[in-house]
Length: 299
Image (cartoon, rainbow, N blue to C red; front, side, top):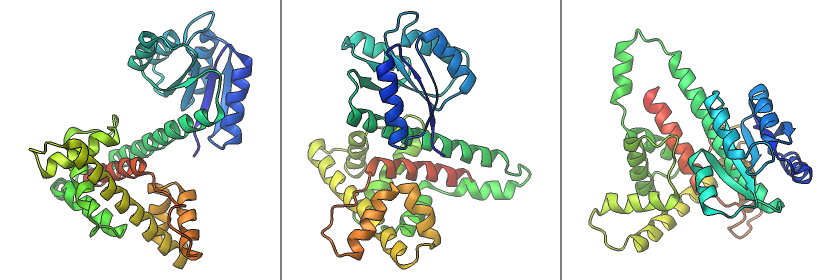
């Protein structure tokens, strides 16, 4: 299910542009728009959108103040700030109060699409995690033996099985991916997912705690993981070409990858085109793998 949005901006032209980008690019639907902070807060509490695009500076009430009020009243959606302000202190204050990204004015279509793609992916992961937690809450608590078996599962067991299903358990980058998943599980980073650079560095240190050249090691890890994730997408694309209704293809392809990239990879393989059209999103792959690992450990 695609996310829904609210736009709070006292600039009608910017509001129209943002609404057009959201709807024309297929990111979701706009539940409503408001021309000020007070009106916007009321609209957001009534419609409970997944994502709010809110202007930093408005005549009646600024975006940060509106955001603080909404959170205090229980709204827990995601915020994207819109502003032409370059003041680092104000930008920092906005981030500290929970914004996800900035969209800078004047509105640039490509920049907005890029930002909305990222925040939409985070919403999908949130929903996926919510469904996992809801499923776990429905488990029968009166089965201690089964619970004991579940507790005995390790991150290594779960990740290796998923990598095997994806056809990449023997790839050189699978060891790096495994060490990253173990580190994430240790730190419980479900909500606050690290940057790729931090993950690559953790993989270097996992294999060599005394590594001195982290930058060089991180680049090597990045290359191995990228090749491995691309191999996973190619493996699924090959399955899809043979049997589009294959359970592994139906489950893993749209979950771990942008399906248009999988389709490009399928076309690449089918028409024997040079590699490069279907590019894998490594961060999405690692995020989904971690969320799925957590769910399997719990369930």
